Image 1 (cartoon, one colour):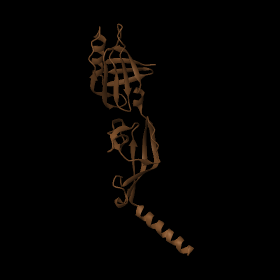
Image 2: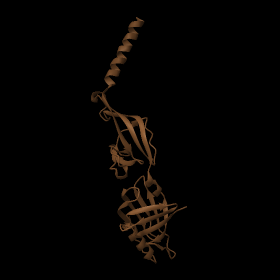
Image 3: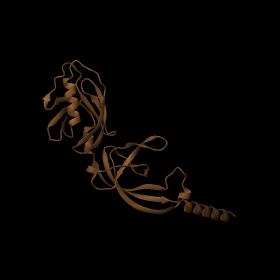
Image 4: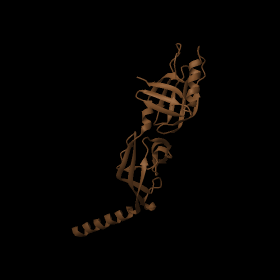
Length: 228
């Protein structure tokens, strides 16, 4: 009797395993972005991985990746090229609100530091168009760059501002529309010059603790020191 029960248990486990077994598997590889991005997860917002299946990560077009990758360790600030096993499950065995595809890490193929992370800080403006700032008792302009959210914020010395970064790579930056408060201060010369120069900036360079912005013709628009 004991032998029959044991045999029956083995048969049951075999049936369960067969019903949960994948229909097919395949190996694929792609890059994981160095930062997650806010995405629509159906029931609300979530932080999603972003992937790219090409080789030119300098000009990558990243897409949201809504699944999890078993055994993968996300590291902020690092691009990772990974090989994964893509497991296609029987849709009849998968809950209605779950994906029929699972992903499992096979190997991390390559890691690269994200050079854009050098911008992720608070920067105090020291020069506009190459000329040292004289703030005349106004609040000094500063710029905060949030790489994870691709957002900027700060003050021009009078008004606060915020905006998006539309595109960013190792030396170019494209800013989106900038929203700004509309106060009037005793001296608007520096705020006006700073705001104009910020919107004209298209490239950047960091040298130690100093950050330079340039316009499309290579002229210096803004210069910052890393804030304490």
